[in-house]
Length: 498
Ligand code: ADP
Image 1 (cartoon, rainbow, N blue to C red):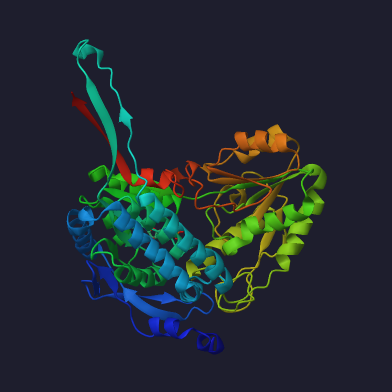
Image 2: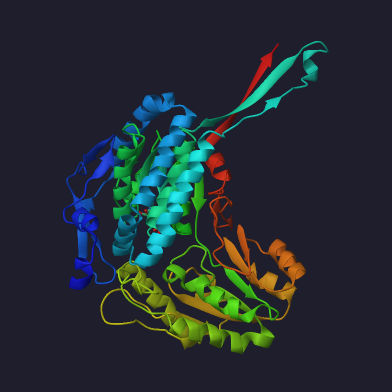
């Protein structure tokens, strides 16, 4: 650890060298209560630094600041001015990619190389994409018929897409800076103001990002960041002066958010859990299917809502294919995220470590067989060996429930019909992978699987321009693409009697 900490960039070392404050109404502040909480390095369990323990009082302050900014300077900002400010955020992130990447790796445990090349650089891309959308928010012109108004009456109507107002955004710890970006960028492009509540496990990159808004020239109060726990998120979801709440996290908490939102019926969008099927047909390109199927559940240590954790393999290649997946997974280099050669880092927290360990033990007790893994790695930090289970039944908890760790359950199937039914046998519907060289089979299966994103001959095929979200209990609404703007605007019809 000493060597790793000495390898910190001076900016990161400086950032974590003292307790942080949060941003409300353009001021850096402590929690009203004065309380703080620690954020930990998951590779060692050691404290990195402390952040304000915000609660309902701080949420109140932040919502008031967001409301004042919404009615004040932000409402006078032209779309092209918003565009410029949002673009500037993307540029600053690119300029500081290494700093953001290292801070993210330190707080979350993910590999610094991936944090920088994927999380941060993609975030910068999402900022720029949404900058462009700020000037492309359009209504349409419509000629109403209005037959009951008489034959000679004439009308001209148009629609406007208007911002919602103050948005509460609650994000998880698995992709902290990226989730902050997916939420903030379209909300701001559409002209809203925001109160962001980062996850308690990983508050640091959102606080670093908060500095960028000041620097980019956003008026105070347009973006507010309140660090805290679930109670702060609950206060934000229930707040009567918040117009919309956007959430990414567990399905369980998503349901609580829907209930909390009933007070003022604020709009709600949700990106929730998954137990995504990854389907490998015998006619796939096996080499790329093995590599892609490993990445499907191992990327980000399995801490992905889209993780392809139900691996369906056609029976004729099942044994050979699952063994190849297990062998490839077992070769991943495990270590702390700050080590640039690390492929598999620690899980984010003791709680997640305990949760994943519990599932692995349940799987073994149920009678599943681990081709590789099945236990802790090392004796400090929250590391778990990548684990491939075979001999599983559909009703095992390792097959039905979201584990959020590097654990996959493999099941054989016979044909297209068979696998579509098995794949859809889930409360979730976030993503699916399909591997085959037969184009017709790929299209037929893509149409049959109940999932918001389907990736053919690849996995994790995300793009800034492609809408993303869940079927069934995986969520409400679609983020990314221009559909994200729909989550942050409402339509108004204006009808004029001529
Ligand atoms: P995970 O299970 O992946 O840790 P959660 O769904 O528990 O994710 O948490 C995601 C985010 O939701 C975090 O920012 C967390 O603080 C917040 N949160 C937890 N409980 C609630 C709640 N009841 N209402 C609103 N937000 C909550």
